[in-house]
Image 1 (cartoon, rainbow, N blue to C red):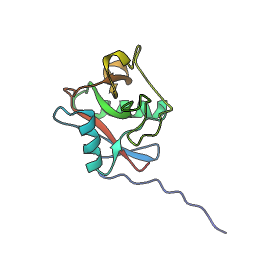
Image 2: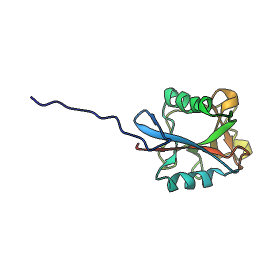
Image 3: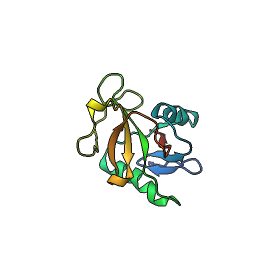
Length: 140
């Protein structure tokens, strides 16, 4: 008789298991979306892809585990250069959690930012943010 054993992947130190992948929030100096994407690559990961409401809520919940509250963070969603919202690998997104009237196409906002002040809703941004936070993901 043979048994199939499914093991839960182990995450690196300071990373959190989330729906079969590992995620981590990084904060530091003001950082653009592009530089955040490069910083994730240096961690052998990518900016987090949010595929469903449960993943969105999980990423938003990481804020409550911090010693100081964050305003929000960069996530792996962009409509540059095609105009279609994709992840950092260019795969079209199927889940969105936009705040009312977002994304604002008239404001040239091509990068998604999860706003914790708006219960994890997404807003479009074009410039570096003062919080300098972003979420990376690997194993997906």
